[in-house]
Structure formats: structure tokens, C-alpha cells
Length: 443
Image (cartoon, rainbow, N blue to C red; front, side, top):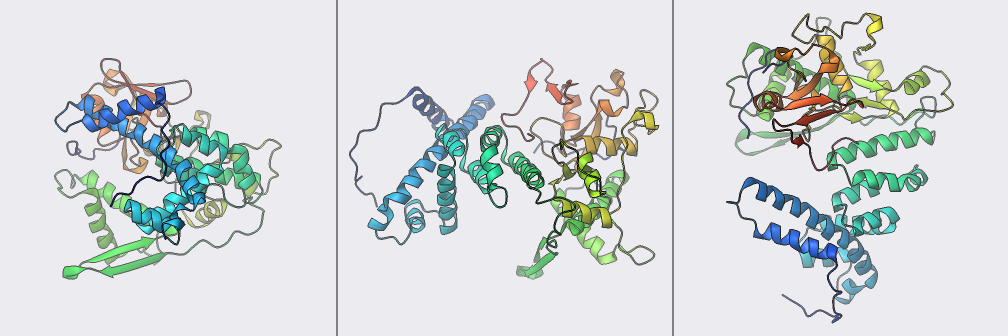
């Protein structure tokens, strides 16, 4: 096993009834409904002592049943809302009826009702819901994307957005919808660099609440610059501790370590010699059209899909990118070998250079490369896809970010990694079984 990052220490081992008003007979079970009955039986019949594969199948069955139930709820709640049955029962609103008859909080009941009504009004969303392909959480995320000033563009792209939503995890869908919205704003000329001045970003907000025994809870919402400063400071201190080996036998969780580091940084301050606060290094990717447009050049006739993101954090608007450019320390990464930038070392060296680690972070998707893992790239190591001991070179084409759990796991279980023609990495177990996840995190 070899990690192309500096040595950081070993990870821990993996951690009252009412009579129904309607007496209509239900329709006969369809094949799809029969399949759902089988999945429900699989889930209800599972026991904690069953084997791992059986328990995994029960969890997958739960997902399929939940999506079917949530999809049916979209149509049921929209019809119930219009039926006025809730008023006939003496409730002032459908929300209070739902809360009283399901035990949900009023907030949760309101969210469920709003999501169902929004989903029923959108043809492609309603169709996917009826087919049992989307849970309520995904329906809510897609429905919330239809807001001013890009409603018409949403209606145009709804089918594509819904199809992608059926394949993504919730976190991946959030990122995809954020990318789509910024691109739609640019297409609608509502987010152009030379357009109207965007509203000022919200400032930093912090609340320190007292708890028992002298403890306190810190709740903060930071603007992009503040978030980058705090993240940069914590990462710098974590890297220092890892490099020194101080974390090898540390029993604290990462949250506890970062909490202690935050207090330590606050106590000693991070002022430079001239008294100015250090500017954080922001690793960002921007497409060429957006960059040239901000520099004053006319946009091309055929514009590429807009891309402006902070690596590991996701899409940002043009005004946020402009603010970071003006206030943060930025590094320009040139990946063309013709420029002489040494990103390919072959067998001349084993350790990845700082430039290579930055290149791997930028060309990654912002998280660990292992299927289904979403550990942020700044918390990952750099691993040789083809191991150094097997003749692999220290080249960015042979390097990928892997978290401190999956890096040793890959070597311990002799997992093979192969890069396809599209640049994506395929992982297979020792016996050749592909390692995948049921839902994608990245569109």
C-alpha cells in the first residue's frame, strides 16, 4: 500500500379509528404492485441476525417501497386538498388535519402538502412520482428549482431535470440543480458579469447560546470569504498535526478536533506581521467563457455550459466568484505539459508534488473518487491508481483523491481501478465484481 500524499497516520477501523367513507373495491393488483408487495415482505421479514446480503436487500427494498409510497402520496394529497374533507372534519386547514391524523409537526405537514401540490402541478414530476421513481425529498428539491426569474427555462428543461433526479443522491441533486440554475440565469442574462450589479452578499452571522455546566453552542452562518477563511485555517492546522503524527493515536472525532482547533486559533489569533488577516487560498474552477466575459470580452456565439465552482463546495454565482477573486489568494493551475509545468513525473519520483495534489483536487469532482463516497477532497489523500510498486507513475493521469478509509481499503482488498476514455474511474473487487452505488452523486 502506498499513499502519494505526505504520511498522515492510519485511520481508525471502520466504524381512534374511523370507518372509511368510501366502500369502493380496490383495483386488482398489477404486476408492479405485486412486486412492491414482495419488496415490502422482504423488508418486514428481515431480522437483525440475517446475513449481510439479505439485510442489504431489505434496505434496497425500503428505498423502492418508500419511493412508491411517496409517489402515491403526491396524487393522494393533492386530491385530498381539493376534496375539502379536512374542513368536513372540523379542521381549519389541510395542514392541521394532516398533523392531527399522522402525528407530524405542523411544519413537516406543511412541507409534505406543499411538495405534493407542487409535484402534482408539474407534468414530468407527477409522472415520475406516479411511477415510484422519486421520493418526496427529491420532488421537493426539483420543485423548488422553479422560481423567478427562470420559470420558463425550468418548464423547458423539466423532463431532463426529472430524469437526472431519478439517478442522483439527494446531495448530488442539490449540486446539479445549483449548476442548472446558475446556467439558466446566465442564459436569461440575469447573471452576466456586465449586467446589473448583484445585491450585496449576506454578512456573517454568529450566535453563542449558553448551555448547562458553563458550556455553549456556537451557531454561525458565514459569507463565502468568511467560510473560506475558517476552512483554510482549520485545514492548515489539521495538516500540521497530521504531518507531525500527533493525530495517529488521538481518540477524538474529527468534529472534536476541529472544535478544539477553532478555539485555539481564536485564542492566539491569525494576524500576520503587518496585522492583516491572511487571505485564504480558494481553489476554484471557471469555464473560459465566464472568465473572458468577466474580463470584458464579448461572449462567443455558442456559449459553453457555465461552470464556476469552489472545489469541494459546489457552484457559486458570478458575484461570489468576483468577490473571491478580489479578496482571496488565487493560484492559477496550468495543466498543459507544453508549458513546462511539472505534473508528469513518471517513475522519477514517488511522492506527489504540491502542484500535482492541487491538480488532482481541481480535476476531481470535489470528493473522494471511490464509488458512493462523498468525503470532501481537502480531507483526502492522493493515491496511485496503478500502484507505484506495480510500476505506476507519479502522473496526474494516474493519481486520484481517496479518503483515509478507502485508500488503505483499496490496497488491502486489492481493488483494481481503471480510467475510462471519459476520464471516470471504474473500481472492481479482486474477483472482478464491479464496485458501484445504486444512485450517483455526480450528474
